[in-house]
Length: 187
Length: 127
Ligand code: HEM
Image (cartoon, rainbow over all chains, first blue to last red; front, side):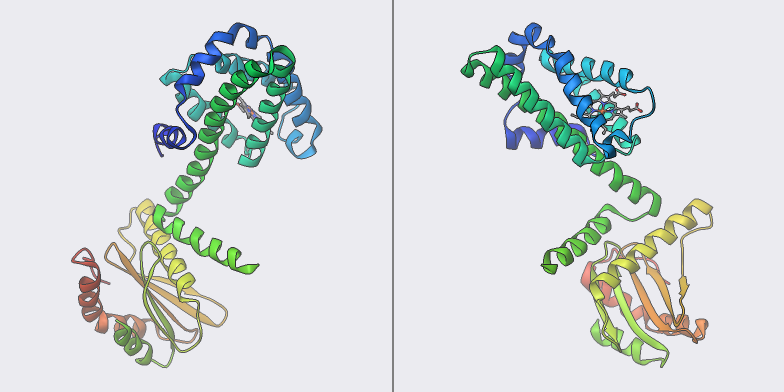
């Protein structure tokens, strides 16, 4: 399995370093933690109102999910992101969703919803300039988490295919290139 | 390489096509009496070679030497050549299996020599 540090390194090289955003969030953390109720409600109201995502949840699971997401959110806005934080995002948060068969498009869409809800709240609570600063920090860190989750999902499928069939990763890549080329040339 | 593969295809009426591929699925050459998509066939043959090796490994019966697939009107024989390449031979259904292996074995030393020239001496092993 690809090391999550490599994925993070690519993220930081392209999207920019993470550390300065941690400092911003740390300054506002106590305030931001209070938004957990609102964010989690919008998040799960939405996921439960769309049939395809709603069908993923087991009966009576919502409370447990809300507790987990609140905890996750509070840790994210704390700005305290050590090695164990990233390990948790990649191995636990990311792979918990692979285990439940939740595709990348759901995760990325849900993250987009979370970010927009955060922005709306920030604009209500802070002067515009401050809201933009806090939102930029939140967006950066949650983009990094989404990148880790999406990469973990893809590498898990690739490794599972490679492990079960004995096909080397380069051969799987070759199949993907041939398929992509056909799709590309179709239109 | 093309001449060798042409020779293999021409050596038996029942052989329709031959595709030589790396284990990564890149075609190293092909010869065919009918139009085939050699790029995709090469990737499929490489996959068959991987899959059979994985299955024989798991079963603890040593590396795969020959894979035979029989379809409604034809057959595909796959022979891994060392760790880096495999050859796929597409025939009509009614073919003597031993004869195909014999033809491959007859040409193998020359194919291996050619592969060595192409890939260096990492091809090792024989059908
Ligand atoms: C912004 C994207 C998301 C975040 C940050 C997030 C966060 C989390 C967290 C922190 C956990 C607990 C993981 C653990 O430590 O075991 C979790 C579990 C779970 N999430 Fe999400 N989630 C996201 C998107 C989604 C989506 C889109 C769905 C479904 C449509 C979903 C369904 C679930 C389910 C079913 C579990 C329970 C997994 C288990 O069986 O343990 N999540 N999520």
